[in-house]
Image (cartoon, rainbow, N blue to C red):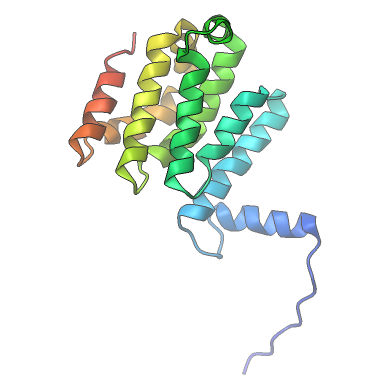
Length: 178
């Protein structure tokens, strides 16, 4: 019989490192929650390296990584409303290239997970929001080039989704690429 070692309580830093390594493909299993944790931790690392993300965008992005489908859809709706509303703030955001880069960077991190979500409405909304951002903001269209490698493979898969609604939303968004 192998002897079991006694475990000691972890510090919070050691627990966070263990959770991040497990989420990145370690031995603690996989699944939806671990994939979300990996995406969110990489997003936080990118945020710390590149500067602060605007507050309203950060709140919406955090919702993309929640486990409830309704919350993920609300996060997508909030990201879309940041650009496509008719108020003065949304109109000024459409021309802001830094905000467009931050938005598209956050969406590029989350899009592979959202486009393969088990819930059909989330997949459809992810493609619809991507199309709305491309339609509303020239700055987002300009920033798309930096994230094509991250977004394009799941986008092409969404174009061939089993649900006709998801495939139609992905195809209409793809048609907006300049």
